[in-house]
Structures are given as structure tokens and as C-alpha cells.
Image (tube, rainbow, N blue to C red; front, side):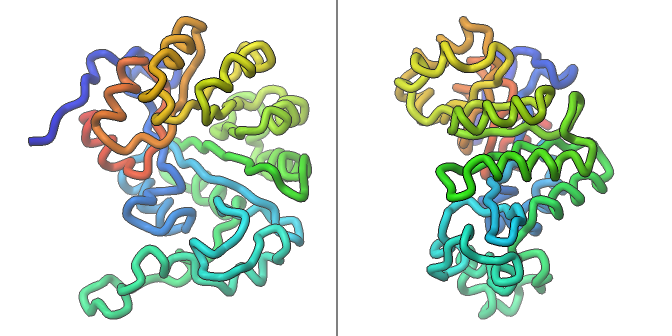
Amino acid sequence: MRRTPRIRRARQNDRGASSRPQVVAHRGSSHEAAEHTLAAYVKALDQGADALECDVRLTADGHLVCVHDRDLRRTASTQGIVSTMNLAELDELDFASWKSPWSELDDEAPERNPQEYKVLTLRKLLETVADYDRHVELAIETKHPTRYGGLVERRLVETLGDFGWDRAGSPARVMSFSLSAMNRVRRLAPDLEIVMLVDKAHHWPVLRPVVGADWVIGPGIDELRLHPGLGRHLVRAGREIHVWTVNTADDLDICLDLGVSAVISDRPNYMLELLGS
């Protein structure tokens, strides 16, 4: 029997009247489709995800693309390094076969649109969100270290500015594990919401004195499980909390107990089902 999470214990957040946390699709609906592909994001949107999460890296010719790893061995079966390749080179690669390597042998598999499984530019993802028939938010993570340093954040803010999304009221927020990156975003776009990601509980005492009072904090679910004091400290400090990567009912219960504002999940549809949405 499926266990229902304790949604009654969730606190109301600032994103609307609903007491449930925002459900954010981690790299799209990445449990079911190849991560960071247009197909994964369209699936997440169709499933009702409130927001989409993506990682961005800068190509050699200055394009922001949605790719997590610095190299392409895992998702495109090549030794290529994203930062040394042009967009045209990346566009020739298949970013989906690794997820379903036997799909071509399945006569009953639905026909694939090749364009939905190529490298996805951030601009294309922003266009998809802008054209969708309901309000959708974006959580964009800049990856560091990178050879381009602060140019990544500068290009990101410029791209958001093309949509009018670099100011207060933007549906986009920017995340990073890099404190320097978050400070750059704050300087470039003072009104953009930013999320300081935390991958180790013992990093928080170091970060606490230097992060802005209005910054969202983004701990990983594993750290909240292993070090429950981290969550309690964040709640007592009145911090808004966004948690990654929340994929099970037990994970969701931890988040609901803390009253987090957003859960970032590979399985947005499952999270919405558990939340009764």
C-alpha cells in the first residue's frame, strides 16, 4: 500500500495559497526520460511540475547549454569536454540513448522526435517555459569550477534579461554551490532570487555568516537525513529551504516536517501524486 506523506504538517509558503511545497522537476522528469533533454522537460510540464531545474555550462562559442557533467561520457558517450566544444559540435550528439539503450529494438516503443533528444540550450528551455500555457518557474544552477569563471553568471543574467527575467518578479532563480557565483549574481541582478546550495552539513556554520539574509538555502536530502540538526537550524533561523533530490515518500516526509518551500525531484509526477495534487 502506498503511504501518504504527512502533508498536514507542511507550512504555508510564500509561493501561493497552497500549503504544499513547490514541486521542481530535477533536470526534467529525469526518472522517466533522459535528463536535460527537451523531452524530459516537456514530460515534466505535462505532468504538472510547478518548476523546472537545470544545470548550465558555457560552450566554447559562448552558448549556455543544459548539461550537468563537465564531460560527456555519461550522457553522450564521448570524451568531449563541454567547455571546449562549439554548440554545433554538441548538436551532432545523441543525449538520450544512454537512458534507453534498447529502445530501437522495441517495436512498441513510441516514435522519437530527434530534436527532443539533442543538446538543449538554456534559451530554448526559457522559450519553452515562456510559451507554456500556465505559470512555470525555473531553478537554474551554474556549475563550478569552470574555465570561464564569472562569465557563466554574466551570460546567464544577460540571457534572462532578453526575456525580462533578470529583475523582481522573475520566474527564474539562480542556484550554485559556489558562494562567489552567488555573489556575482547578486551584483549583476540584485533582485533575482538566489539559492545557496549546501552539500555538506558542516559547511553551513561557515556559510551562515556570509550569505545574505534573504538567500534561500538548498541542502541535499541525504544531509538532512543524516544530520537532522541542519534542518532544525535552518528553520530556527527563518530560512526558506529548497531541498534536492527528493524521490521517495520518506524523503518527502522529512521536507514536510521542516516546512520546506520547494522539493527538487527526478520524479515530479510521483511527488505530485503523494501530495494529492
